[in-house]
Length: 163
Image (cartoon, rainbow, N blue to C red):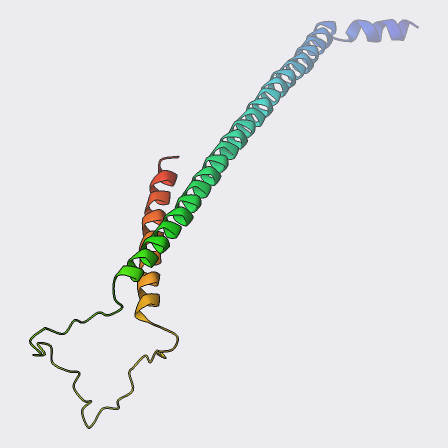
């Protein structure tokens, strides 16, 4: 027993107490740091979720505005096309269907279409069968294309104002 007491007396209690204190402080610091980092991480997750929600709301609003603009432009296009077709039909009833008017004195101021040269075939480069296309159809297509372009420009201006 004496040897056990002498052994205990030889142990540096100050060093053991100091190392225990350092160990407790180290473990406490680790726990405190872990709690602080976890709190920051949770705050970042909440902020990210709020940002995602805000972005989703903004995307929904922009999509709704774009849909409204698209519908308005489409409706206006259909209305303008119907008006254009009706105006054209009224005009066709009153105006004769001809492009070239012969002068009253009988002189032809425009030369007739020349005959093809001997070395060139008489077939056009892009033949269009006359039964499928007429001046009336071409005029209608040109008016519709112009109307589509005007409506597209309006649509583009309306969409660019959303940003």
